[in-house]
Length: 103
Image (cartoon, rainbow, N blue to C red; front, top):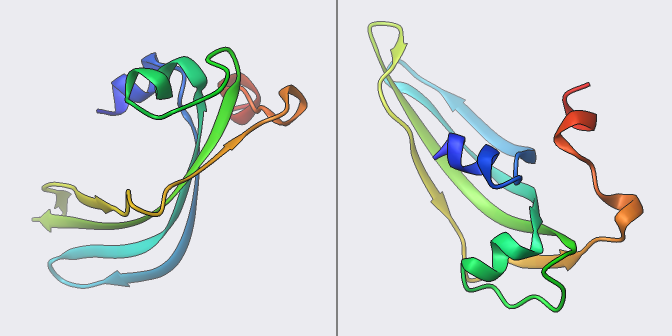
């Protein structure tokens, strides 16, 4: 999954964590995830865009559960609210590239 996100050029991600809980079994949290996506990628996923050459900021609520076993992450379960997805077309000056984000 993560390699696919990188390969399609959607690898600039911001996660605003609202709640985080740590326990003996693992970690749970929720918040809002924002991902910069190329319009052509969104179009192939069925999201209506007016310009496949533009970039869009896609925001969703997300919850995650990371179970641990003997100190090692043993899985990842994520749940995303797709009903209330927000898609905003970005001006080219607002687009952050992976190179800029990881510099």
